[in-house]
Image (cartoon, rainbow, N blue to C red):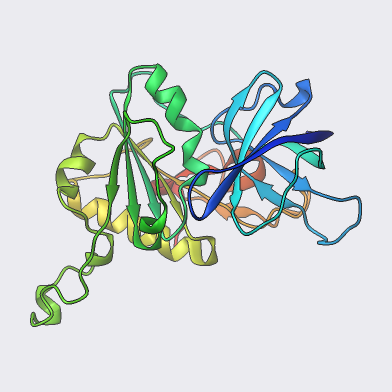
Length: 266
């Protein structure tokens, strides 16, 4: 990991909630791949004390594209102090036809950088926006991406008894069985306030839709607070199960994407 300086070259609004920053970066970040990220600070003061976790959604010639909330103020010419590269690239199978990306109660930003790479390799991509993620508008994404926006009517089936309704109704979408069965791999991002519980729900939900969840099929993108980003503080440690060679993983070094069948979830 190296510390470097980036310059904001351009700021543009992409939808009502988010904006994109074009950052001019040095060569140390040129090898960043989908799944990897940076820790950023906009000023030289230690305020806030911890750096912000920035997820690139695009990369070019000494340039990173970062997606940030629209209510935050950035200007061209601002200098950003970066630490990176954080984490490992997403582990895609060598032979892929279809990939399902799921954002549950969180914007899909950590998943977006995968899309151009997958499309360029003739892999079809479906993006499912569940829960509050349905508020994220996607007009700026490539038209080849199939976007599923969950639409749950709170009045639907209101008269049914609770035991007749699916316990995963909040995760359901139309044709979910077909979409999940069609996917060769699934990558999921959830709201970071209670990742373990939400990932447990997603694992159980997909287990209900498939006869089994094979290894190297369902990955959760973990986003804990990263105080150091180099594995020294061990604040991002996750306990694993079913692994003979190791029983823990550090998100900043081994993540962010972990096979959910190997993580000790809630």
